[in-house]
Length: 235
Image (tube, rainbow, N blue to C red):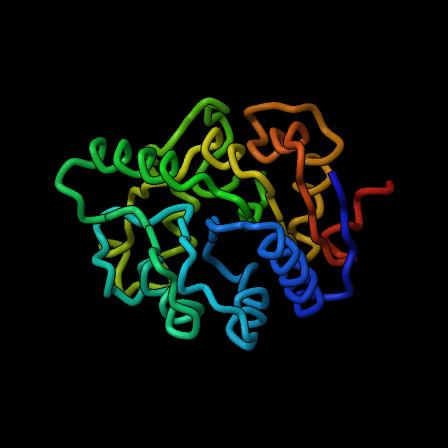
């Protein structure tokens, strides 16, 4: 485990990008990608680089159930807007939120991950220690699965939709076991509101009540934090 402290999110993105370049030089072929505000500076570094991903594969963590890929709140759309339009991959996989049989889709996604082992996985972390949509209480042995979003998550997401009825109530998420199968995991966190989760993740007991704590056992984990997110580490 390695913890890298940075001054801000922009520097964090540059640091993660440097780690990615190293992984590519060592033969990485498949990237595990995340959505949300945390990786945006990292994606900007990639978009502005001269790296070529046309022979590489990307696999995203999750997608909302019920949203078409072209919906502007879907994670497909997020990835297209923030990365893929600048750096297309040979293959880019995200769960199909409109699949007729969600359980079949979950098994299909596990098959994709098995056929394309993830070399370099990007993660953020929730204030409650969740990674992907793996909320507290999720089994560490879970692979891709269907998640019922919590009331807090639905409420938080409602600001992006014109009405509460439009807010997705479920998501398809890569499981904790799937995430931990990646050869290298780079987790980024910025801001004071992530400080407790980071401290518990790194120094607390390994418990399914704080999903990210399982990463203490990962053989190649790098955690990138600004000073605010790292503020409870030495208390």
